[in-house]
Image (cartoon, rainbow over all chains, first blue to last red; front, side, top):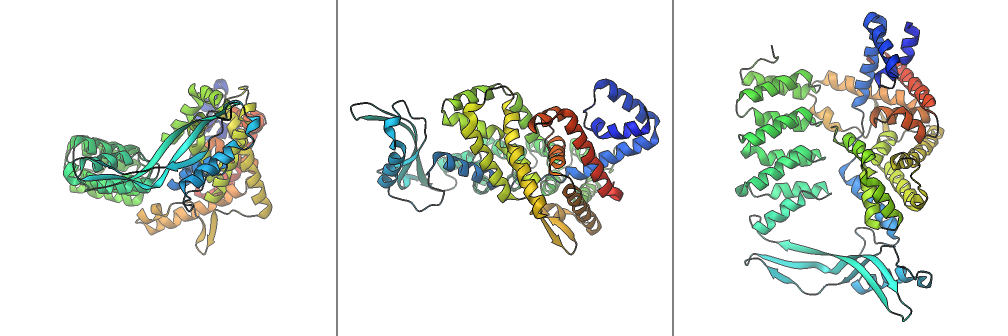
Length: 306
Length: 203
């Protein structure tokens, strides 16, 4: 194979797009040719430079896109934040839209409509600390099917979701349980707020595991940082340290990595030193790298592994 | 983080997708929503990376999934749903890129005295950098990368995006773009050559 031929194949070789036989021949040539090896290095450098360009999707954008799509499909669903109409107005409007042209639809209608129905009454729950009440007089429902018969009657199947407001002390078990549930909401602001309100006095295994889950898996860096903040008092816990060490090696956010280094160095143990030594070798952010080097110095450990 | 790429690969192999499609074709709205949620993060990321504008990415998302919704009844399983969906998404993105070429506009990039800055880049990274020389170098590199990508034709840009960032095979990319694997290979080669020339001394 000539250098000219290999040069044309380098991008395909780099991306693993060559048939096995050709790949072997390119590889053999690269072992012998310094010029083509340099070209291959430039290809890798290009890839590395482009690697950091990946756009970040702002966390609320996905939720907004989904809401837009749902509204467009449902045709007439009120946009979020629209002034509330009375429950019967909404119900009748939705039913009017769904039932329009009904003579054409004798079979179950697949269309889904958002309707609101009245909700009456508040109820009391818990041992004297927690009141439940509806946020307003509306409950939202998704109509799953509408079936009419010739006698003028109609059968409607719908799922109902009611919005409620719960208020109580942050150390109330009910409130803590809801805060933990809020970890799984789409809105990152809700997740950050919920983590912030977890009571420090309730460092149960459930709370700890939820915080570790957020640190390990939440796609939003703000949420991960908040979880780290809450984990500070637990920085000596072996499970917490294990998760932090893993996240330090995989997280793409420099601020998260810095915060983890700060928490890990509060206690010296051999596995922490090993992790820091390993990470410092491939850290490409100079701020984090400096912090790692200082941490290793403070722990009386060398920067490299020998 | 690699978790989204893994998610996308999983979605392509997930046998449950077929049953979701069939249920959605019968009018099951929950199934349609689940189907959307299986793919929509990667669709949005693709649009954001190509168009560098949340507003444009939002438009692409809406148009793509509405087209899917309206035409799902015609999907006959003669290719994977992933390929079918990405054919729709890439067509919409290519239209947007072509319009921008005509307008000579790259809405995600802002010109400043220190060079062009991509407004989709997180400033967090710069803030975390303690070394001003490195910050400047990064900024110049980003500016040069934007120029290099701006010099690609919409099709070269798309092939490069799908191969480099989305990790798709060239055979699939050719299928999505209605062309051959060979043509996709040529596009990728031209794209990398052009970028290596423009980035020159940075590599």
